[in-house]
Image (tube, rainbow, N blue to C red):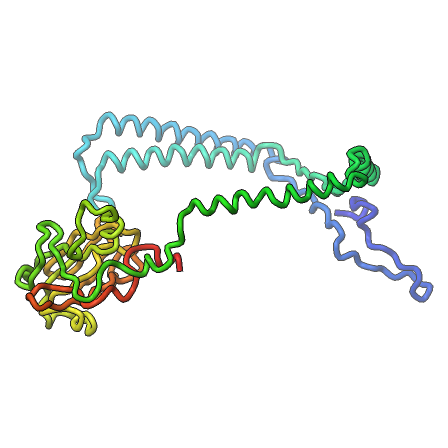
Length: 350
Ligand code: FES
């Protein structure tokens, strides 16, 4: 690009003050302008343009043939026929033919269009001028004048009583929303940290309502339990069972890997919260060979022989364990409450 093509304001400024001679000051932000236009071979050579035209036509024709191939494959190929394609192995011949022909048909249309645009369509460079987005000084003055007129006409400055009470009203309106927060209910306080379990409370079979003895829990079985005294017709049964529900399994003590788990068990019987630590589904599947408990909702899997740690799935925490023993009557009983909150989301609530 020659210097005649560059706008005058973008030419380097000339400094005539230094030593009376002409020194050139470089403008680091000068618009470099567009590079000199280079004509494509197709613009100056008719034979090259014809060649490009033929390439584009060839690609479009190939697309048509591929579409015919697609229809022919669909009509003629047996749905059960398979074909060996390296490295995919044996795959359905019909699927392969349909996918290949449709892919070729679409690709050729796209490639033809791109080649057409790059070699034959108009090759004019277009530059869009950018302008300052700031308003003209007259517009800014007019807006300020309108604002001042509006303030004067509303008598906002003169009527102080109205102005002050308006500020008061605007400041107090949001308080209504704050007051409504009370409807979210009382704060949970310690309720999320505790359950009904306490020292000496018997473990009762969830189905039969009978107190459990160690002999009721054979190796390999999964038993669900609740605290003695919690009845289905109780007013707060749902609230309590959502935290109290237990699952019991018996594992050969030598197979329990976690030392604390072994200490908190009784003759290999371990009691864990039945409430999944992901989003609170009741865990109901147990694999006796691996001692894995599985939550059916999102497949979180807990290893009951290793502190019920999570070995798969979205749950973020191991299941809480309840420390158990036997009471004077030989029934299984809690030796205290869980030592951590049960269930989901507690961790996110802090
Ligand atoms: S609730 Fe158990 S895995 Fe989601």
